[in-house]
Image (cartoon, rainbow, N blue to C red; front, top):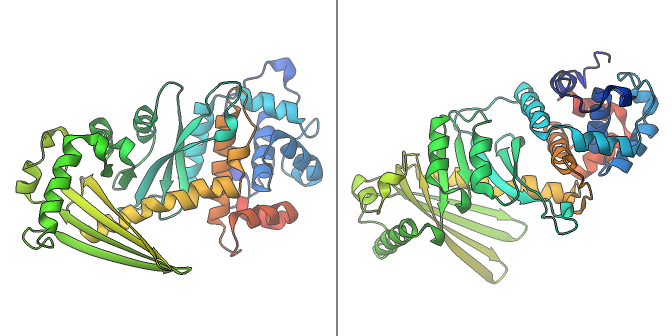
Length: 377
C-alpha cells in the first residue's frame, strides 16, 4: 500500500485487525478488503454486492494505493471475511482511529443511545441492538457496543463507557441508563452524568414529582432554584424549553434512598412545549445529575442529547438505509454497523460541500477527488 494521504490513518489503525482466514484461502489482502468496503460504503454501497460493484467500477483508482493482487474480492468473499472478523477487535481499531481525528473538549456532551438494526432479524432470531456514543458538539460517533441476546442496554452501557475517554465530559442517557452502577462508572471515568428519571424509578420519580409540583404552586419562587429558558423557531415550529434545577442539601435529603446515587448534586425539571400552527404539545421530564444546579448548562446538555436522534439514528436510516440492510450472517451486522459509523464520521467532518449526507455519498461515488478529501479528514 502506498502512503496515500486519504487512507494513511485508516490503514494504520485497521492493519492491526487479525485475519480470521486460514492461510490457503488468503487470495486477497485483509487490509485491501477492509479499505474497499469502507470506500464503498462512503460512496453509497449498502450491501456486499454493492461493495463488489463499486470495487470493480473503481478498480484502477483503488490500485493506486491498494495491492489488490487478485483484483476485487467477490461479494461472497466480503461477506465471509466480515462475518468472521472479531467485532471487538474491529471496534477497537475504529476507536483508535477516532482518537486520531478527534479530541474531546472539557464539558462536551456525550450522548449514549441505543438503536435496533431491524433488517438483521431473520428466522425467529432477534434483530441486533447497538448502543452508540455520540459526541454532540463535533457530531461524531465515538464508539459502539452490541447488546447481547437475552440482555439489554443496562449491561451494554457500562461496557461501552469503560472503553471511552470521557474525562471532563457530560454523559447523557435516557431513562434505561438511570442505574446506580452506570452513574458510578461515569464518575469513575472522570465524567459527569445527566440521567432521565421516569416512573420505573419508583421512589425517586415519586419524590421528585411531589417536590416540583408543590413548588410549582408558588412558581418556584420559595426555594433556591436556578432557571433557564430556551426558545427555538424552525420551519413554522416553535419549541420552548424551561429548566429548573436545585442543589439545596435540604431538598436532596428529602429524596428517599438518595445515598444510593453516587455524586448526585442536583434535581432537575424540564418543561418542553412545542407549537405547530394551532396545535401545542407539552411534556414535563425529570433528571438527576452530578453537575451543580447550572440550569443553562443542563438545558444545553439535554438539548444536545435530543439531537442524537436526528443527527445519528435518523441519518443512518435515511442516508445509509440501515433499517433495510440484509447483512445478517454471524459478525457481519456488527462489523457493517461500525463501517457505517466510520463513513458517517468522515462525511460529517468534510465541510466544504453544504449538502446532506446522502448527497455527499453520491458525490464521493462520482468524484474521486472529493472522496479523497473526505478520506483525508
